[in-house]
Image (cartoon, rainbow, N blue to C red; front, top):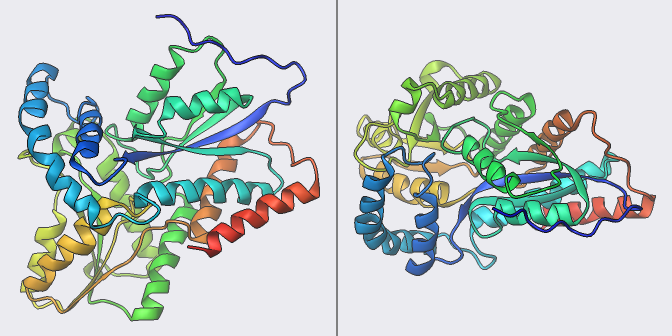
Length: 363
């Protein structure tokens, strides 16, 4: 395989340090055709579905991609915004705010966002950073808890890109930050702000994205890291064990996944006479289909039909100042030792800061 052409080399160019904030991805539009393309790429990743490739190809192309795109498109349409997919909107805002926050602290770091699947791909953005003179790139997944199905897949995409590049930039990779104090504090402040406005629930449900249970037995640390996040968050909120539950959502297929499952848990709570639940999704740093449709629509309906009286969904961290501050701290920790020289002049620094603050004010 030939290497990609290198961008023109400028001997006078100041080396650039960059961050690539990576999220899962989203279809380009809430249509069956767009979902077919997106799901085809997503579900073809062996990190996501560990079934022998020939067998899975037959299932994927013979059944799933014939039936699922139309159903998924309707779900995406119910949460789509004028700006586009919520996941992409929030991830883009986070990247811009992160660059502004870093500039405010005196660090001249270029920040871009990328998606593992779909448009604004990881290879595309790494090419753009290299063309902009980036000689050092910190890859920052939007997943606080490590999983082979998500975090490792980003590393795979980086490796595939690197295999085609002659002159590689230095690369660093953030594996996890599930127990980072800033991340936990940002979650706690998000929840307490909701409680100040709406009062406390009878039960707080912390819903994490599920993965097949077999991955736990094969050595994936995801389950343990979710439980640690929940434990630290409960401690910060001063909750006793009977005041919150940890559940797992988004089960796909017939295999056994991490339990307890979110929706059946909510149904059981409703039937048991629990009047109000609050649901938060700590593993998602941006609101998306799984939080806005699966939780705030489907799970809400299931709880209310089961006898519940009040369901309060607490939004993801999105562009909250506490979360951007935590992202900034996590980034600086992993950028340690790399040159992040201050912006060349005060007006440029102020402009970057003010642009970030203005963007946050529009949320």
